[in-house]
Image (cartoon, rainbow, N blue to C red; front, top):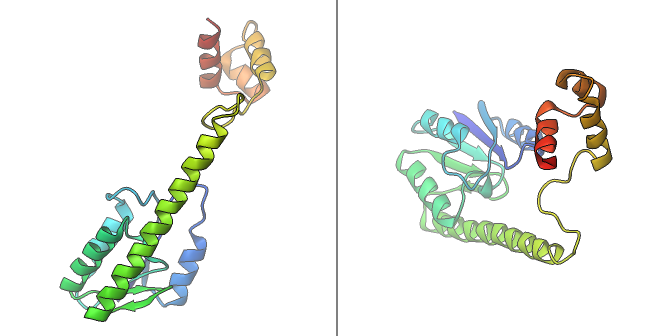
Length: 183
């Protein structure tokens, strides 16, 4: 049986392209999740690993979808090989349990880890440059302006939190936090 595994790192990313690629490969069952690859305890990945039996094939679109590092990729694939499970990485091909197959896996895993490390490094560099600006503020930008929040707080004098939320769209928890900041 062919099992597919698709993963994206953030909720805003779309897993649909990976699922379509797995369907095109004839996967009988597809497991998908939105979960960071830096965590080892990805629930759907653990589920697919527990389902796999000797003679099955695990299909992923790219190596970095199921492995966090070179060592993790090698250990995961080695454990699958020991159980008699084949691994098919769509952008690499079928990974074979041969010296050449393991070498290619090791090299490709190294490149995947290197690519991820470079993304992290560039992100940190960008953040360091941005933090030098006087108006830099880490985190997500505020959804509402100071003026909007002040208006909503003034409405609280004559309206309930629920009424103010309905009128302004600003949640009760946001209003409570804003009220505490003012004290």
